Image 1 (cartoon, rainbow, N blue to C red):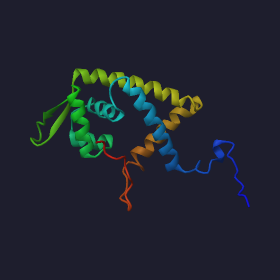
Image 2 (tube, rainbow, N blue to C red; image 1 turned 180 degrees about the horizontal axis):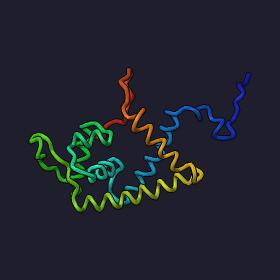
Image 3 (cartoon, rainbow, N blue to C red; image 1 turned 120 degrees about the vertical axis):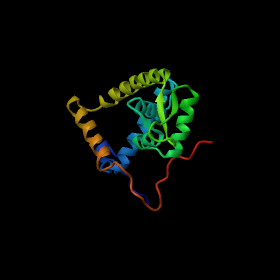
Image 4 (cartoon, helix red, strand yellow; image 1 turned 45 degrees about the vertical axis):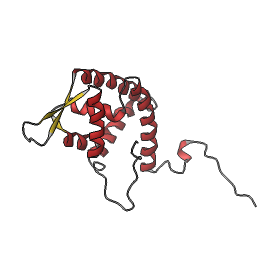
Length: 168
């Protein structure tokens, strides 16, 4: 006795097409792989670019940057170690807290930010061309609102959500 299998003929018939977490996860994976490939030509990772771009907008401690970019403190330290070794950032003593370090972007780091922003801009424009022109800004604004407000923080859960395994 066979089981009938119906093939989906369009995206709207995909069984998870209305599942927000699944859609965002798929989009995130596809965008991250594309961005990783694009930023490799500039010599920086997506996480490294985000940290550089955020650090270039003001005077931030490592902890403040970690919170802003959405990474844990350990990941921030590893990322800053890589960026510092490449001559893209310097860690300077904070004038407000002798225990804290301010992340200062070097001239080479500023150039890397500019190059990375061009890669991000081209990729974003390319991806958003899949939407009608009048929906692109609305989509980006809506997504930014979700991330800034309702989805600003994760919740504690059991079992915990698994993140990527640490690199060796």
